[in-house]
Image 1 (cartoon, rainbow, N blue to C red):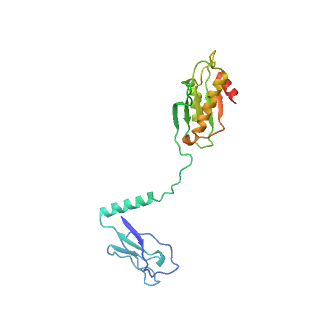
Image 2: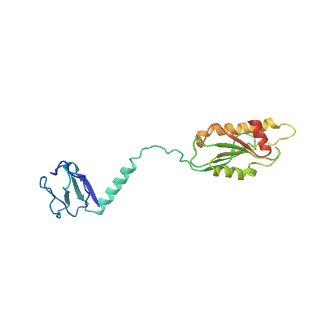
Image 3: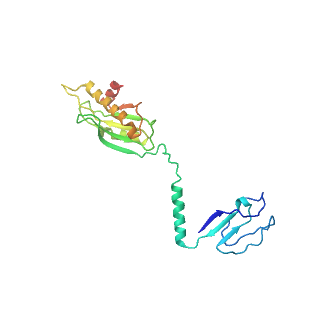
Length: 214
């Protein structure tokens, strides 16, 4: 292994060619502005003198394996330390976060699927399952969620409270959809997703709730 450094004492012409890189088996010497002489072997220090003064190189041959090793390590650490420190845009991996609680009711949970390389402009859909407002759940629309994810769309597939004959009717279920969107908006910075402009998608009765929410 060899280490190359500049040296100032060349007598070459001012307008000579750009430097030619050679390994230190031999050297070419200038006598003023004359042509290089025949290469000859020197000691551990050899000189490349076929270039102008500003390009003169002093070639040092490293004598021991340990010296070569530490020079390589130093060069490697120097290159690592020369990074710009800039964060790449769109570098986030795909994520699947299941059973995220967006509210206090046991059915206020959702599965959040986030595509790779997402940004704040990536589309984000809120997916609402069907089931006549009284049954089924987010697992029934898993194929839709997977398809959207594979097309680079973020998706939150939500469960909502079931309708009954007493306390829960469409206003409460619409409130669940609103609360799920509010949760997604709140965690946009954490998930690296858009904070607004959600798309509502619903299957059967879920489509009805999507229309009511919109």
